[in-house]
Image (cartoon, rainbow over all chains, first blue to last red; front, side, top):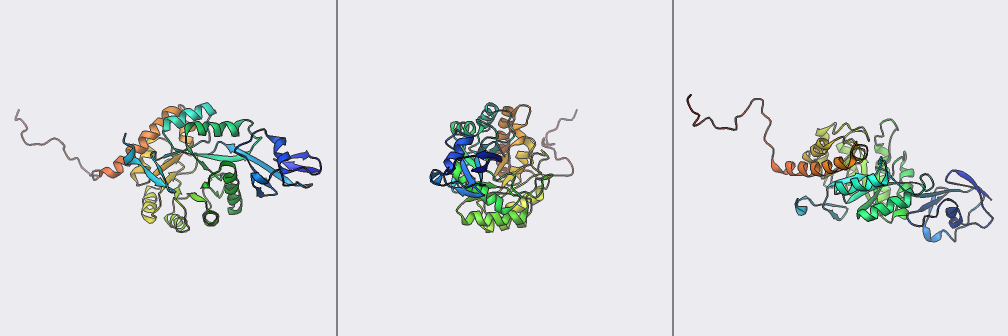
Length: 66
Length: 261
């Protein structure tokens, strides 16, 4: 399936989960948050939350900011 | 310097330092760490961005803040609507495990000044969602009161636009805000140099939040140290009862006993 992770088009196998999408963009384990189509997906739910074709996934972490 | 005298309470937590440092604008993580340590701050802001925008930054920044032993204050920088800011606050809570948020909802990118209508709306929602909300607001005493009324843990009026270094543009309004609310008042944004931070404290602010003034100074560590002492000096002066301003001089040396030469 085709989806967008952090603004970039990606291809993932059918049945892929939020955890798989996170693994595409980072090895970091702490300090992460994920939104799928604008909705927060709590960390505990990543491995069990399936993604669908066309989903927009944002994988976020700490950045410098005032 | 006495720790006890300068302590203040914010969101149910007691802080020894009244300087809150923003991490934006630092040239490197190393420079940032040195500045944080020199400032003596115990509360530091950070932002939430795509993890692959600056590889290695996210984890490195969190490790650094851990080492410094500071509390995290995530911001909602870059949000233009209440809906967007509320979502970012929830994501930050998920990422950083804190329900504290520096709530920013800006009105336009040229001034980066707050959009009061959206800000109040977002504050109300986040307080209901259990957040400790610290809103970056304008120097409007009425809006500050409305933010306190909906349950914000502090109000953080801008002294001047973010990053402008113009200081405290409307000192009278900052004083009015101090009189209008019972929650801590934190001067946020606009500070350029140490005297601006001292003035904010002399006006009655409980704390000062600044980033660029330190991170973009030619010598961030020296400026961080200057800000630490400026905030403390301003706090002491505010409670010391300054002399009234006079139009003419008033000699400090007595005339009595002056020799006839």
